[in-house]
Image (cartoon, rainbow, N blue to C red; front, side, top):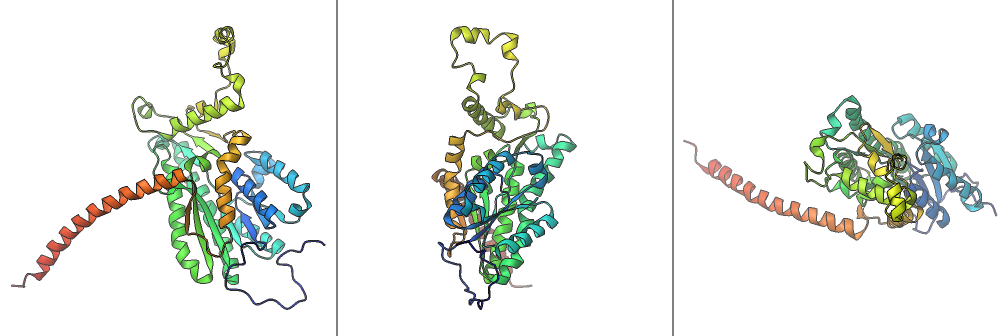
Length: 386
C-alpha cells in the first residue's frame, strides 16, 4: 500500500486539531536547515528509519560545484534511492539561509510536499579560528566577522522567521537550535565563533517566551565544542607572532585544533608520517625529496593567508563523535515536553557547571556591593529635608 503524504488533502472531514504535540512515535515532518553536515545526514537517516518525513536544505551553488561536504550528501542520496521507504519520505530543497527569499521558498516547498513542518532543526555553523586582534589585520580578516554572523546567526534566524507563520497557524511546532557549550564558555582564539553562538542563543531564549502561547516549543541543544567545529567548515586567519604559544600562554584554539587535526592526519594518511618507519627509512626521509610533501591539515591553520577547510574525519571517529548528539536530537525532536536546554555529554555538563558556579560566586560578591550602595541610598533618602 503506497505511503500518503501526511498533509495530502482527502475527502474525509478534517479531524479536530489537537492543542498538544502528536505522540512521540507518530510520523513527524522534520526540516533540517543544513543537510550536508555529518550530524544532519546521520539525523536524517535515523528519523527516516523511524518513519518520519524529512526536508533537508543544501546550498545550490555548493551542490552543483561539488564543494564542501556535498560528496557525503550525494552518497546519502544514493543510499536513499535504494530504500523505497526512505525515498518517499525525503525532499531536498535549495537553501542558503543567508538569503531570505530562499528560506521562504524552501519552507513553502516543504509544506507543499508534506503539508506541515513539525520540527525545525537549525544546525548551520562555521568556526573562525583567530584571536580578536588577528581578525583585525586587514579587510579580508575583518570581513570574516560579518560572514560569521551572516552564517551562524542570520542563517538560522531567517529560516526561523519563515517557518513561524506555519507553526503558529497550526498551534503546533518545535524549533531545535544546535549550538555548543561555547554558548556558555568563551574560548581564546574562537571569539567570533563564541559570540555568534551567544547571539543565536539569546535570540532563541527570547523567542521561546513569544511563541509559547502558540504551543511552539524551543529547545537549545549544546554539543561539545569539538563536534560543531570539526563537522563543519573551519576557517583560520594568519597568526600574529605576539599570540604564539611562546609569547602567549593562553590555550589558544589554533594550537588545540592544529594538534587534533594532525592526529586525524596520522589516521587518514599514515604514510605521511615518519614515526612508524624503520631507521633506514627515517634517515632517507631527511632528503629534500622526502621533505617536500603536502602540509598537514593542522599546518593549514597557521597559514599566512586566510584558509578554509573541512576536517577529514575517519568514518569510525566521525560516527563516535556525533552519535550522542544525534541521539539527543532525535529523542527531543517533536516530543510533547522537550527540554528548553540540553547539554550533550558529561564533559560539557561539568564544564558549564563549573562556569555557572564561578558566575554564582561572582554574583554573591556583587550582591554584597549592591547592598552597601542601597543602604547608603536608603540612609540618604531617610534624612529629613532641611
